[in-house]
Image (cartoon, rainbow, N blue to C red; front, top):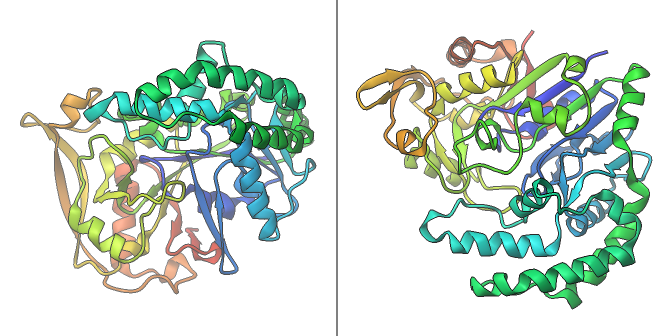
Length: 424
């Protein structure tokens, strides 16, 4: 039996969904343990594109159990829309293959209004949230004022409570120039969603431990990435949950003692969405990737900021997460470059450092220290065996593994399931 956590080693959008989808073939249970529908996983199989926000990626494999854990903030209306779309693509979703924790907190329509209003109130200090209500949902959770999955079992009582909260919060929402939440519009949708989702709601901690005792293999998929972690990320430009491996345990009820393997995922370059410092950001790299049709957010459609691979961040992420292995995705995005840069250290006020500082003021003063690698100038997308990668690509990956202090075991050279290469 082997229980694996897949975690992002950058600012999210590393291609974790693709890696989870690849690894799911060999597990029985896939668990989402934190975050909300501010995250998005894109998986392509048999030329069909599936975009997942709350539903675990294992849903695309018909024989897997999928669990939305207690650490998730769940938007019932958004989840129903997602399930409906997936069913329209032929995906089977029933209470037998999708479980929702009765302790997962609910992201309500007023949370979205509060999210947008608070962001507007920040003025030029905006964080760059998705506006999906994630921060306010977690705020209610910490203030012990949240609504949990159990509330979905009584749709009428839930709608009555939400109506009262909408009325309470609309004054602040409108004071910031944000359109008030229309209770007449959202409450019928919420009631319908609660009725539809109630059969999926259960004590998922019990379900997961029953699976563990039965010898089932479990895969925990992370949302966002290490540097959006509320504790270990580039605070305050972070999300509102623990995106590192510890969050998978607290967000599911599985002890760290039962985790056997951690796979950290990083792109062959770096991307970031929203505000916040980005030491290796490079407009030319961004233009190149955007012109290739790459690096647009699965959740918002926003163009991602792009830059060279920052190995200081990746090494830190591997250390914090206890990574046993490293998966490098989007290697083919670098196919056309003559020269590829790797950030191996920083200079802060003239001093070389090998770790990310803790304050935004310091991070904004960082200068990247680069080493240059010769590009392989070859289309990698048709390769199906890691041994067939060009020598210069292998050299680049070997240097990445050396700097990360973790072996590269998986390589992504395209979006499809068969474009994930395992390094033997």
